[in-house]
Each structure stands twice: as C-alpha cells, then as structure tokens.
Length: 196
Image (cartoon, rainbow, N blue to C red; front, side, top):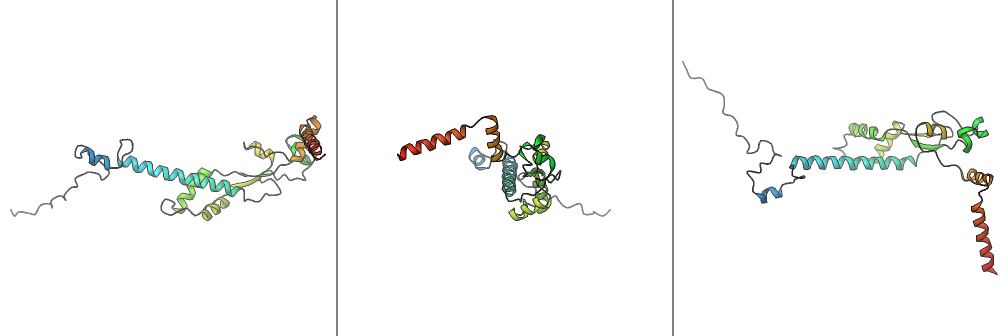
C-alpha cells in the first residue's frame, strides 16, 4: 500500500500560552519587577484596573457636563409634569404646598447613568473621544431636563427650590422675627455716630 502523506506538523508554539500570562518560575526577580503588576495579580489586572479608571473618569466628566448644562436650560412658564403656572388659582391663593408660589425650577429628570451608557454605545466612545456638543444634544434629545413646580419636585424626591426672598421677609415679619431689620438699624446708628 502506498504511503499517504500525513497531516502537516503543528506550528511552533509560543513560549507563553497567553501573552499577558507571566510565569514567575521562568523570570528572575529583576525581570518580574519590570512587568506591570496590580497588587501582585499580573498585567491583566493592571489593564483591567486602568480601563475601569478611564471609564469612571469619563462618566464623572459626563455627569459634570450634564450638571453644568442644566444651568443653561431655559425656565419654562409652566410645570412640565402637571402644567401648573403662576396664574393657577391654588398658586394665587397660596394653598397647601403652594404657600410659597409655584417655585418653578429646572431639574435633571433623566437617569444620567443610563443616558451615559447609551451615549457611549451609540457614539463608540472608547474608540472615539467624547465631544461635549454631542453629549449636550444627546441629553436634549432624551429630555434629561424638565421645569417642575414645587409639588412635582417633592413627588419625585427632589429638593424643593428655595422660597423667594420677598416671601421669606413677609414670613419673618408675620412671625415676629425681625432680627435682620434690627441688625440693619444698629448698623445705620453706628454709621451715624461715626459721621458725627
């Protein structure tokens, strides 16, 4: 029977089975010290830690940009959830939660973590640098901000906006707390005495 050719010989194998795997038995201490280590777990752990840190920093930057962009949002004349405005009868009469008025304020109602993750997937962020204009458009496209009244803000668990200064002064006078007025009078008297 004729001799048939057999399978080709296997290709030569690399010295290490995985490029990131370090065999400490084959390296002396000086060579092992030069390799990137992460708490003694090897180069893979170092790369994983570095990647995690880059993602964390990028998402912190995205969150900061989102908070800064909230200040640029225009204040709507009505609440975005319940459509209450300054001319609503309950607001005018200062009934219940409306004792300080509607107190409209722009809030960040979108989940920034979810929006950041979807933004990174859409724009292939690890491979492409983040552009702040794209991030701002992404937030606006997904309605991340909304003008809310005091009642809707409390229902959603947000801190209510502070009362207007005029209302705080009226409450202080009504409650008999006029310490600020007394301090101003004392300051005026001291100024008059110095002038004489």
